[in-house]
Image (tube, rainbow, N blue to C red; front, side, top):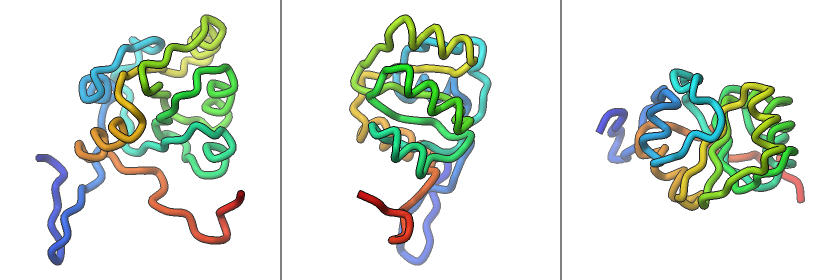
Length: 141
């Protein structure tokens, strides 16, 4: 498997860059918005259903994995310059959300995989999280 590294008895995956078209294939995803952006390259992802967590921890240029489908997701992604959204659990956004994503040129994909499986499949192909863990100073209730 590409990206596989072995170091001091530990196995981990080297960060790889994936095209959005590869993400679609890996996740057997439907492209809801962004057919013309499938050559976009992404190398990190962040998964959350709380937009406050996305605002606190997600990084620009990453994929957002979420089950939320409202316009607030699009606004948050736009503010943070997140590359694209992957809706999990087969979720479908409203027409209002689709129109806003289209207007802001934010790709939106939908996969039937749950969040955990979605993250695992991307990680197995070399994509890493935009944040591995938070330090105590960064956590809040």
